[in-house]
Image 1 (cartoon, rainbow, N blue to C red):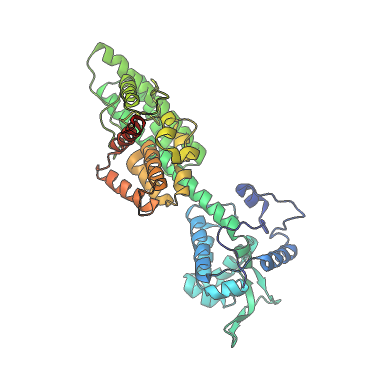
Image 2 (cartoon, helix red, strand yellow; image 1 turned 90 degrees about the vertical axis):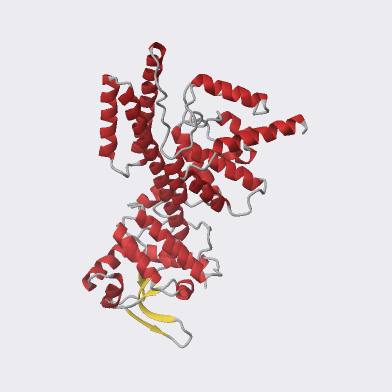
Length: 433
């Protein structure tokens, strides 16, 4: 009984050139046969199958296969040259195979079109199209084929299946690469979602600011930016989401400069509304940020840098004035995950990498981006990682972070207070208390 162990990365046997490019895997014509060359491809799969290590938990293996296929279907990849519907059909076919059979022989799809059609909710003729698409993608290969393509299956006295049809061996051989691709797609989707939440929050803030202090030029640019966001749709490509966020953030800086200029001539109310769902505290000007951080340093903060006078995505949303440069002093456990700069792109990538390391579900991470925004999500993850490293969290990091998100949704999370507490603890330690 051989099947891939969880996390084991096997050679990219059977990957198409397009799929290999997406996964950044090397493919050469003589080394990795593709489904377009069925004879060599099937021989390569058979050879790779014999080299797979044994697996101890057949049910867990099938669960990993189903999870991978569901992720691929959810995030609409075309790297496999397979539609989302056919990925879902394949997932259903896998669920119809006993875990023990998957481990023993790769699983045999040997029933009739009618039998499978009833369980997939399609017409019998459609099954021929489905099998053809799966075979073209190289995720199934024929097993003991006949000229008329008839499929039969029977179970012997030793409980093993025998017959003719299709085997799932290619799916198992390629599972590590497919799992990696599925995780990448899910992570990209979370990052795009975070960026679009941040864009929406910036747009709402600018509308409120310009409603109170109008400016025809800025209002026109805001309308154009809003139109570009609508045209992008709810699920834009990663680069398009980055461009929209950069555009909105740059415009928000100009709007705030407009407010600052007006405030020098006449009293202007505090219109920096922050993001929906955030406990962002009072509005902080550049001068206030400096004062807050200088005070923190006097009480035993990082002692290295002060908050920048310019606005920054990573530094301007926390009333405690914490900065990227201060992070490695406050959170030594997250040194490898501290972003190189405080721009939105760096913050969301750092958050995604750390969440993955802490085994936090991407959907929970997406929920946090929605509730707290990008910057506060990153600082919350830093806090979780540091407390985990110190042994202060009895539950899993994911469970603890889920509680933080839940409290943030009700306005009960005081992240700034927690960071002030860390600063005080460092100050007390340095003072020898």
